[in-house]
Length: 220
Ligand code: G3P
Image (tube, rainbow, N blue to C red):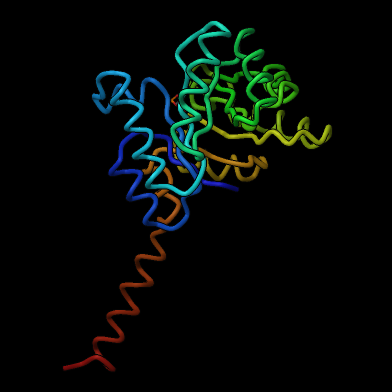
């Protein structure tokens, strides 16, 4: 399973990259807004900075909702760096754009997926990734992880190459559940990734090893 970080924050991306397990980055207009980036030119420069930190796919989202606008933006984004994957919403125009971009060899991440049917359409259009939003389904008392369990077997059954990129991850537990469900990729905030390291028995065990070493072998 690939690990992507879901942020546009350069410090967090650098920290995740330093762990040695980072495979890519996803951003969206809300995450970009959080960084206080002003103006299109600065946004494009920011994407290039991200691409220069991580050797992997970096999703940058279009904000147009019509086919022509999406294609224009997608071509501008794809020209920035070879790591760029164009994020496109699962709407009618988005579907057409994904098909067009796939035919042109431009990678896409189909976003705002909330049902197996949406995922199936995106895969048929040739999306590189589909992004089911787990946390937002949980927010409305639905089951986000169940969506991954439903999409993965459909893609495997028909042999779609489209990767299931579990998004809107809200906890460390979500990451484990996505791994169990067979997600190809998870994209997550840094804290949820770091949560995977935690176990009280690891802390206690390490404390005891160091204590024993320092009271014998390492005694001064
Ligand atoms: O990148 C899209 C997705 O991960 C958004 O997450 O927490 O805003 O639902 P969230």
